[in-house]
Image (cartoon, rainbow, N blue to C red; front, side):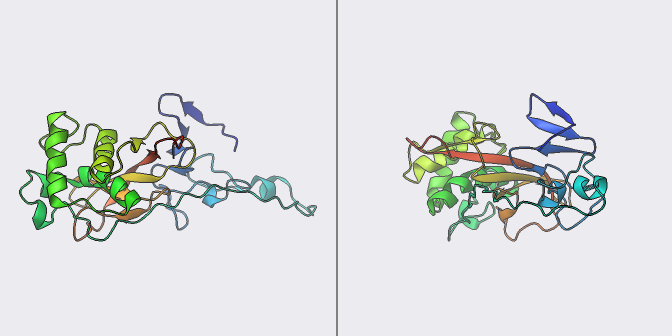
Length: 239
């Protein structure tokens, strides 16, 4: 893929006039202002081999637009795209407003970020943290300031690593928005609710929501940022 747009060397994102593009995810981070097509976050209609989107607003087909007239049959080339399947939330996973977590301060109102981070480990292992384990985790994470008393997550990597350890997978870690090699294993999706409040959810590699930590899920939440999550297993060399 050839980009004429400007690369931000700090974030690794490309500025495509109307939007920012994340080459790691292969998608834009904000929706198409023109709202063209069915997927407002995809780059070039999910067909970057033959199409471009230099403005972030309009998918173009240079081969069709610049080479009119009869064309020689195209040589079919098989492109192998590595697939990473993000597992769903395990049965019994506790939402932030579950009565079993009511004793944890600010969990029901603001625990979406924490529970979305913990869900990375829960989904990967197929095990759900218990209410006792979540409460103990919050105590430990607040003691080392990885999580604030208002449930703001300062260090998502630490939160996910702690969850893996409590689920019996000590040594398995994760990095959020850095340290990746290839496709991410999952995503953390930040959005804004209809009331204007920030809300985090757990998603797949394409930024599609797999689990909302609030029950029932908060409808009308608009995605504003998708963060890739890379899981690192002992002696596995990364995700």
